[in-house]
Image (cartoon, rainbow, N blue to C red):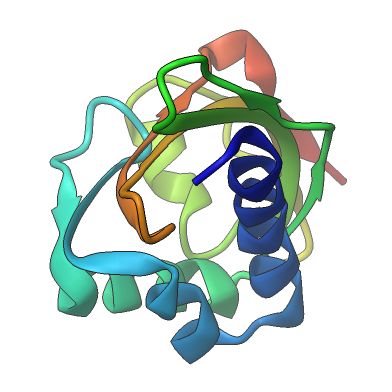
Length: 144
């Protein structure tokens, strides 16, 4: 894939997340793809695990804003910064348990904002082979 196509694919990932289309999102991944998000949790591997991972995030009304992607010179990678927001429940408590953020007073109405840099490796056909999300605790904020 050329640089333009890889950038478009990175943006398409965010578009499909915002559309809430689980099937279309999983179609972007190779059958044995690996997702590391967040670092500290075990990697998610394969379509079944990806589906379960994203279904949980979709249940939290995940939405993200994507910046302009950058293409790697290696003909395989694209990097994109995303700012995502989701309901605190059901994912936020795992962040609080690890000390990554303070639990909100009213978890039922709170949301979490996270800024992350996604490093996406694609194969020549454009399928995502590996996606790694980089962020730190200073990139997490509880809203509301």
